[in-house]
Every structure is written in structure tokens, then in C-alpha cells.
Length: 302
Image 1 (cartoon, rainbow, N blue to C red):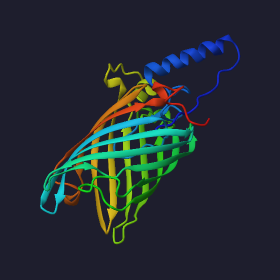
Image 2 (image 1 turned 135 degrees about the vertical axis):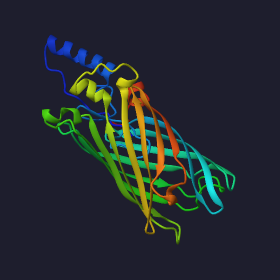
Image 3 (image 1 turned 30 degrees about the vertical axis):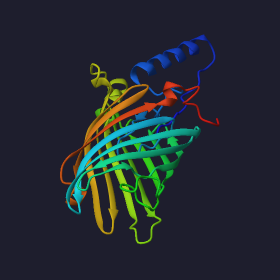
């Protein structure tokens, strides 16, 4: 999810008007945060929409994601392909509603169909622009029985979650080359409604190094396109249930511009219970609050 965060208002006079126009142009070219075109922004920091661990922002967005992974099954390893989608809609500038789903194709045994559909709410609690920090709270509900019988569970899962993100732009000049670093994370329990079904505690974090931030706010090293818009990162989504921790370490890249982003990551299982081979994730993400800020990307209530 993304956040449409306001920047400073222009002061009076012609000079301020010129500066305002220059700021908008610069934002379009180099991804500087601005009021009209923003994602999850805290000061100079733009938090991308990561593939596995949700970012701390809210916004009008759509996400399409493909995943491939091999995991242990009752009859041996299963190869699973997933096609995920999510649509987020701002109710107010700080509150967003989401709907999501996933089409699953697996073998051993062979099965295809939709997993349960989900709905969610997410609220942006706090933003500290000077320290590039933001935090949100949310709740998601996976609705049991809404997917295909061959794939989906017949019980629901409710997941309240805390999200946070911190950029390192407030480091001293002696550590300026570390300022492009950002860390985000999420944590929360997942409660099942089915009798005898185990609950879990889900958590994860990301470590990012933003080359757009390096170019604009630290030192312009002259990176050409497409490298100047790349964000190398590592995501670590984890879950603990019944005394067993599962998860993956996901190194990859996000290419981000004003209207959306493309992402790709490997999925490296942390143990045998998490998978038997390296998987892959690929993402296409659109920012409607940037593509159509006065129509599709406009909050329902200001």
C-alpha cells in the first residue's frame, strides 16, 4: 500500500511560484517526494511497495504478482505457481481498504483454482519527515470458503498487523553513504476460525539501499537508466506456528518510477519445512494516486 503525503506549501510571491513548479518537475524526473505524486513517503524517503513484507504506507494502488516455489507435501515435493492480485483504495488520505486474491496451480497432487479472497483495512498512524519514519496498523481477513474447494481452506483467518519503516537520511555527514539505507517491517498474529486449526505469528523485515536516494540526496554518481531508479533489497518474511518457524530470504531489485514499479526476487528457504528449492517472485505495481490523482487515485473523503 502506498501513502500520499503532503510536502511544504509554497510561500507568497512569484519566486515561490517558480520554485513550486521546479519542485514538481524535479519530482517527476527523479522521484523526489511531492504533494501531488507520492507513495509511502516520509521526508525525502520513498518506501517502495515490497513484494513479501508490506510497506508502512497507504494509497490507491494495484499489485500483480507471480510466484513459483517448491515446498514439501504429503506425497513429496510440490511445485506451486501463484498469480496474486491486490487493489487498495483510499477511503481518507490515511485510511485504505483492500481486496486481494490468488490463483494457484500446483502438482503432486494436481490442483488449480482460486485461494480464499481477502479484505483489509490499513491506517497510517504517524509520519516523522525529519527522521524518515512512518508506522501504520491494519487488519486483514482471509474469507474461508470463498475460493476453490481444491485449493482454499473452509475457515477464515484474521490478521491484525503493525507496520513500520525507517530511512537513514538523518545519519551524520561522516556516514552519508549509508543514508540511502531503509528498513521496514511488519508483525502480528493470525487467528483462525476453524476448530483445531493452528494460529501463527507472522513477521518480517526488509533491508533496502535506494539508488534514487543516493543520486538525489547524497551524491550524484552519474548512474544511467535503468540503474538510477533501482532499489536493491532483501526481504525476510517469517511465520511461527506450533513451535516451527518457516520463511524465506528474498534478495532482489525493484525498479521504481513515478507511476509504478517492477520487482523481482529470489526466494531462498530458511529450512526444509519452508521449501526444497529456490523460488522466484515477480511484481508489477501501479500507483493510481500518481496515474490519476483526480479520479481513480483520489480518496473517497478528504
